[in-house]
Image (cartoon, rainbow, N blue to C red; front, side):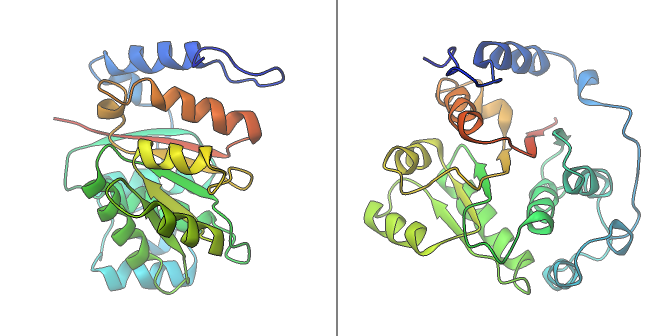
Length: 226
């Protein structure tokens, strides 16, 4: 099933699996591209004023190396793979990219972030809320160990971003409580973990499901480097 795309879909799950596995087994050189723009300040990135307020209120003063290089490509609608050591600001990088591109007048899920653990998903939700505090962003974490009915209630009320673990998010998609119609951004956090363990079969299914209904403007894969 994961390898078969519905008629009319341009997404090939087998090709996706092959390419990602190829990237994950290299020594890292394939992750670098010719995109070499570096922004020394957040102000130079052309971000929304209220997003900048959230960034500075969160405690950031100067962007880290990954933020200098990773926020603007996301905002330009480029598909990217971002790799950096833990604690260097990867989460804030893709959160800022999402917050910059959301249409806040449309209270529908426009960005989906998948993480391998409940704790990480909830941490991402907190960062997203904090950075988007002055934007009025509505974020919800769909994770296991919480009420399915509460998830359904919150999703039906409307959110801009869903952060979650594969099992619960897939369940919400299956129940049609989470609809992919407006999703334009897809982030896979700790992609190496997601593609190498128990989630390996689920992740291509997500891509297949999403690409069958819409054209994602941005797909981002976040990975640590050691």
